[in-house]
Length: 249
Image 1 (cartoon, one colour):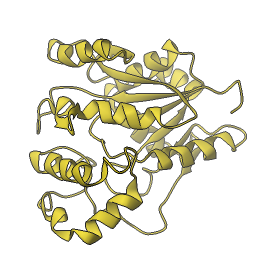
Image 2: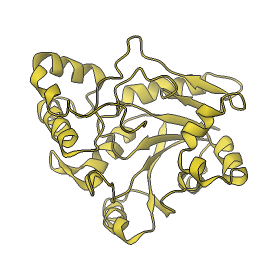
Image 3: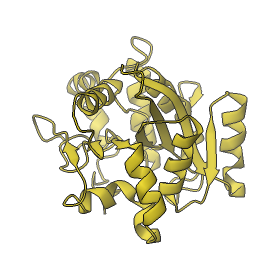
Protein backbone atom coordinates (compact mmCIF):
# COMPACT_ATOMS: atom_id res chain seq x y z
CA UNK A 1 0.00 0.00 0.00
CA UNK A 2 1.19 3.48 -0.86
CA UNK A 3 2.38 5.08 2.39
CA UNK A 4 0.40 8.19 1.48
CA UNK A 5 -2.86 6.27 1.35
CA UNK A 6 -4.76 5.56 4.54
CA UNK A 7 -8.07 3.73 4.41
CA UNK A 8 -10.39 4.13 7.40
CA UNK A 9 -13.59 2.10 7.64
CA UNK A 10 -16.62 3.95 9.01
CA UNK A 11 -19.72 2.11 10.21
CA UNK A 12 -22.75 4.39 10.40
CA UNK A 13 -24.91 3.00 13.19
CA UNK A 14 -27.74 4.00 15.53
CA UNK A 15 -29.79 2.23 18.20
CA UNK A 16 -33.20 3.72 17.36
CA UNK A 17 -34.08 1.92 14.13
CA UNK A 18 -37.82 2.37 13.58
CA UNK A 19 -38.31 -1.18 12.28
CA UNK A 20 -36.02 -3.07 14.67
CA UNK A 21 -34.81 -0.89 17.58
CA UNK A 22 -31.46 -1.86 19.08
CA UNK A 23 -30.57 -4.18 16.21
CA UNK A 24 -26.91 -3.15 16.16
CA UNK A 25 -26.52 -4.74 19.61
CA UNK A 26 -28.53 -7.88 18.78
CA UNK A 27 -26.75 -11.13 19.66
CA UNK A 28 -25.21 -13.20 16.87
CA UNK A 29 -23.12 -16.18 17.98
CA UNK A 30 -22.44 -14.56 21.35
CA UNK A 31 -21.37 -11.16 20.00
CA UNK A 32 -23.35 -8.02 19.12
CA UNK A 33 -24.17 -7.48 15.46
CA UNK A 34 -21.98 -4.36 15.35
CA UNK A 35 -18.98 -6.37 16.62
CA UNK A 36 -19.22 -8.71 13.64
CA UNK A 37 -19.14 -5.79 11.20
CA UNK A 38 -16.10 -4.32 12.97
CA UNK A 39 -14.38 -7.70 12.98
CA UNK A 40 -15.01 -8.26 9.27
CA UNK A 41 -13.68 -4.83 8.33
CA UNK A 42 -10.60 -5.29 10.49
CA UNK A 43 -9.90 -8.40 8.41
CA UNK A 44 -9.32 -6.21 5.33
CA UNK A 45 -5.56 -5.69 5.19
CA UNK A 46 -5.63 -2.17 3.71
CA UNK A 47 -7.96 -0.80 6.39
CA UNK A 48 -5.95 0.92 9.14
CA UNK A 49 -8.77 1.60 11.62
CA UNK A 50 -12.47 0.92 12.00
CA UNK A 51 -14.65 3.69 13.45
CA UNK A 52 -18.27 3.55 14.55
CA UNK A 53 -20.00 6.76 13.49
CA UNK A 54 -23.01 7.10 15.77
CA UNK A 55 -24.94 9.95 17.39
CA UNK A 56 -24.66 11.96 20.58
CA UNK A 57 -28.29 11.22 21.45
CA UNK A 58 -29.15 9.51 24.72
CA UNK A 59 -30.50 6.39 23.04
CA UNK A 60 -27.07 5.70 21.52
CA UNK A 61 -25.29 5.75 24.88
CA UNK A 62 -25.37 1.95 25.04
CA UNK A 63 -23.57 1.76 21.69
CA UNK A 64 -21.03 4.39 22.70
CA UNK A 65 -20.39 2.61 26.01
CA UNK A 66 -19.89 -0.69 24.20
CA UNK A 67 -17.41 0.91 21.80
CA UNK A 68 -15.41 2.22 24.76
CA UNK A 69 -15.41 -1.16 26.52
CA UNK A 70 -14.24 -2.90 23.33
CA UNK A 71 -11.73 -0.16 22.46
CA UNK A 72 -13.49 0.56 19.17
CA UNK A 73 -12.98 4.19 18.10
CA UNK A 74 -16.19 6.12 17.61
CA UNK A 75 -17.48 9.53 16.69
CA UNK A 76 -20.82 10.78 18.03
CA UNK A 77 -22.53 13.46 15.97
CA UNK A 78 -25.87 14.56 14.57
CA UNK A 79 -28.21 11.69 13.72
CA UNK A 80 -29.14 13.04 10.27
CA UNK A 81 -25.79 14.52 9.21
CA UNK A 82 -24.02 11.46 7.83
CA UNK A 83 -21.64 13.70 5.88
CA UNK A 84 -20.39 15.21 9.13
CA UNK A 85 -20.08 11.82 10.82
CA UNK A 86 -18.02 10.49 7.91
CA UNK A 87 -15.86 13.58 7.76
CA UNK A 88 -15.16 13.71 11.50
CA UNK A 89 -14.46 9.96 11.68
CA UNK A 90 -11.92 10.17 8.88
CA UNK A 91 -10.36 13.29 10.34
CA UNK A 92 -9.69 11.41 13.60
CA UNK A 93 -7.15 9.22 11.81
CA UNK A 94 -5.94 11.48 8.96
CA UNK A 95 -7.67 9.27 6.40
CA UNK A 96 -7.09 9.70 2.68
CA UNK A 97 -10.04 7.42 1.87
CA UNK A 98 -13.12 6.23 3.75
CA UNK A 99 -14.81 2.84 3.45
CA UNK A 100 -18.42 3.35 4.54
CA UNK A 101 -20.66 0.48 5.64
CA UNK A 102 -24.15 0.67 7.13
CA UNK A 103 -24.61 -0.71 10.64
CA UNK A 104 -27.20 -3.23 9.47
CA UNK A 105 -24.88 -5.30 7.25
CA UNK A 106 -23.35 -8.08 9.42
CA UNK A 107 -22.75 -10.27 6.36
CA UNK A 108 -20.60 -7.72 4.50
CA UNK A 109 -17.99 -9.66 2.53
CA UNK A 110 -14.37 -8.53 3.20
CA UNK A 111 -13.40 -9.80 -0.26
CA UNK A 112 -15.79 -7.34 -1.90
CA UNK A 113 -14.27 -4.49 0.10
CA UNK A 114 -10.78 -5.57 -0.92
CA UNK A 115 -11.80 -5.58 -4.59
CA UNK A 116 -13.22 -2.08 -4.26
CA UNK A 117 -10.10 -0.78 -2.51
CA UNK A 118 -7.93 -2.29 -5.25
CA UNK A 119 -9.92 -0.43 -7.90
CA UNK A 120 -9.51 2.78 -5.91
CA UNK A 121 -5.77 2.30 -5.43
CA UNK A 122 -5.07 1.48 -9.08
CA UNK A 123 -7.08 4.38 -10.53
CA UNK A 124 -5.32 7.65 -11.33
CA UNK A 125 -6.30 10.31 -10.77
CA UNK A 126 -8.12 9.09 -7.68
CA UNK A 127 -11.89 8.82 -8.14
CA UNK A 128 -14.34 10.60 -5.87
CA UNK A 129 -16.01 7.30 -5.02
CA UNK A 130 -15.92 3.57 -5.73
CA UNK A 131 -19.18 1.79 -4.98
CA UNK A 132 -21.30 -1.22 -5.85
CA UNK A 133 -24.49 0.79 -5.27
CA UNK A 134 -24.92 2.58 -8.61
CA UNK A 135 -26.59 -0.38 -10.29
CA UNK A 136 -28.12 -2.95 -7.96
CA UNK A 137 -26.48 -6.29 -8.77
CA UNK A 138 -25.36 -7.46 -5.30
CA UNK A 139 -27.54 -8.84 -2.49
CA UNK A 140 -28.96 -6.15 -0.22
CA UNK A 141 -26.52 -5.98 2.69
CA UNK A 142 -23.37 -6.21 0.53
CA UNK A 143 -23.23 -2.51 -0.37
CA UNK A 144 -20.29 -0.23 0.36
CA UNK A 145 -18.88 3.13 -0.63
CA UNK A 146 -15.19 4.02 -0.80
CA UNK A 147 -14.87 7.80 -0.68
CA UNK A 148 -11.94 10.01 -1.50
CA UNK A 149 -11.57 11.90 1.77
CA UNK A 150 -10.84 15.16 -0.05
CA UNK A 151 -14.22 14.78 -1.77
CA UNK A 152 -15.95 14.27 1.58
CA UNK A 153 -14.08 17.31 2.91
CA UNK A 154 -15.29 19.43 -0.02
CA UNK A 155 -18.90 18.25 0.34
CA UNK A 156 -18.77 18.77 4.13
CA UNK A 157 -17.84 22.41 3.55
CA UNK A 158 -20.13 23.17 0.60
CA UNK A 159 -23.30 21.05 0.83
CA UNK A 160 -26.03 22.75 2.88
CA UNK A 161 -29.06 20.60 2.02
CA UNK A 162 -29.65 18.40 5.09
CA UNK A 163 -31.48 15.77 3.05
CA UNK A 164 -28.42 15.10 0.91
CA UNK A 165 -26.04 15.42 3.86
CA UNK A 166 -27.86 12.37 5.26
CA UNK A 167 -27.59 10.46 1.97
CA UNK A 168 -24.17 11.55 0.77
CA UNK A 169 -23.44 8.36 -1.19
CA UNK A 170 -26.69 8.75 -3.12
CA UNK A 171 -25.91 12.45 -3.58
CA UNK A 172 -22.64 11.62 -5.36
CA UNK A 173 -24.39 8.96 -7.45
CA UNK A 174 -27.15 11.40 -8.42
CA UNK A 175 -24.54 14.05 -9.32
CA UNK A 176 -22.29 11.75 -11.36
CA UNK A 177 -21.88 14.52 -13.92
CA UNK A 178 -19.95 16.42 -11.25
CA UNK A 179 -18.05 13.54 -9.65
CA UNK A 180 -15.91 10.65 -10.84
CA UNK A 181 -17.62 7.45 -9.73
CA UNK A 182 -16.40 3.91 -10.36
CA UNK A 183 -19.33 1.51 -10.40
CA UNK A 184 -18.66 -2.10 -9.39
CA UNK A 185 -21.19 -4.58 -10.76
CA UNK A 186 -21.60 -8.29 -10.15
CA UNK A 187 -21.49 -10.66 -13.13
CA UNK A 188 -25.05 -11.79 -12.41
CA UNK A 189 -27.89 -9.79 -10.87
CA UNK A 190 -28.32 -10.97 -7.26
CA UNK A 191 -30.17 -7.89 -6.03
CA UNK A 192 -33.32 -9.83 -5.13
CA UNK A 193 -31.54 -11.42 -2.15
CA UNK A 194 -32.07 -9.67 1.17
CA UNK A 195 -29.16 -10.05 3.64
CA UNK A 196 -29.47 -6.80 5.56
CA UNK A 197 -31.16 -6.47 8.97
CA UNK A 198 -34.28 -4.34 9.19
CA UNK A 199 -36.78 -6.80 10.66
CA UNK A 200 -36.73 -9.64 13.17
CA UNK A 201 -36.99 -12.11 10.28
CA UNK A 202 -33.85 -10.61 8.72
CA UNK A 203 -32.04 -11.07 12.01
CA UNK A 204 -33.19 -14.68 12.23
CA UNK A 205 -31.85 -15.38 8.73
CA UNK A 206 -28.49 -13.82 9.60
CA UNK A 207 -28.33 -15.85 12.81
CA UNK A 208 -29.00 -19.04 10.85
CA UNK A 209 -26.29 -18.20 8.32
CA UNK A 210 -23.79 -17.51 11.10
CA UNK A 211 -24.84 -20.70 12.90
CA UNK A 212 -24.00 -22.80 9.86
CA UNK A 213 -20.88 -21.00 8.61
CA UNK A 214 -19.17 -19.01 11.36
CA UNK A 215 -17.31 -21.80 13.17
CA UNK A 216 -15.79 -23.09 9.95
CA UNK A 217 -14.73 -19.65 8.73
CA UNK A 218 -15.22 -16.45 10.74
CA UNK A 219 -14.94 -14.42 7.54
CA UNK A 220 -17.20 -16.40 5.24
CA UNK A 221 -18.39 -14.41 2.26
CA UNK A 222 -20.99 -14.18 -0.44
CA UNK A 223 -20.02 -17.43 -2.18
CA UNK A 224 -20.22 -19.44 1.04
CA UNK A 225 -23.65 -17.98 1.80
CA UNK A 226 -24.94 -18.98 -1.62
CA UNK A 227 -23.57 -22.49 -1.18
CA UNK A 228 -25.42 -22.72 2.13
CA UNK A 229 -28.68 -21.46 0.63
CA UNK A 230 -28.37 -23.99 -2.16
CA UNK A 231 -28.03 -26.78 0.42
CA UNK A 232 -30.75 -25.35 2.65
CA UNK A 233 -33.21 -23.43 0.43
CA UNK A 234 -35.70 -23.24 3.29
CA UNK A 235 -33.55 -20.53 4.90
CA UNK A 236 -34.49 -18.07 2.17
CA UNK A 237 -38.12 -18.29 3.24
CA UNK A 238 -37.36 -16.79 6.67
CA UNK A 239 -37.46 -13.17 5.45
CA UNK A 240 -38.95 -13.71 1.98
CA UNK A 241 -41.99 -11.52 2.69
CA UNK A 242 -39.79 -8.41 2.64
CA UNK A 243 -38.50 -6.81 -0.54
CA UNK A 244 -34.78 -6.26 -1.05
CA UNK A 245 -35.60 -2.69 -2.12
CA UNK A 246 -37.05 -1.51 1.20
CA UNK A 247 -33.91 0.39 2.19
CA UNK A 248 -33.53 1.99 -1.23
CA UNK A 249 -37.15 3.13 -1.26
